[in-house]
Image (tube, rainbow, N blue to C red; front, side, top):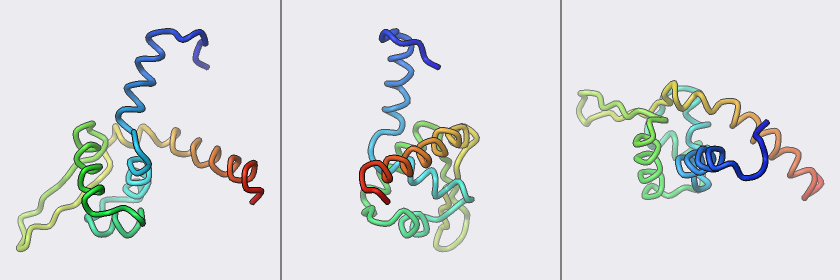
Length: 112
């Protein structure tokens, strides 16, 4: 359990995590990739509702934070595949807890 009282070190680490995962798409993209490497259109279809422009931006940000890797294969036309990194997989417990919290929240707010 984190100590309360707004410890600057705790605040900084939480700020860093939120900056790496900000927005509504990044965790969903990581969740989609947790099942194995995927191509751009596969991610787009699995995440659903995300535009190509936003997906491209989010993939670049996730790659910059070393949460995913982009692999270009020497084919014609070039094949590009995205995969979650070990660093990205370290978020597995966070995603699992968010899943359970989301179920509980939905039940609390919507009653379903």
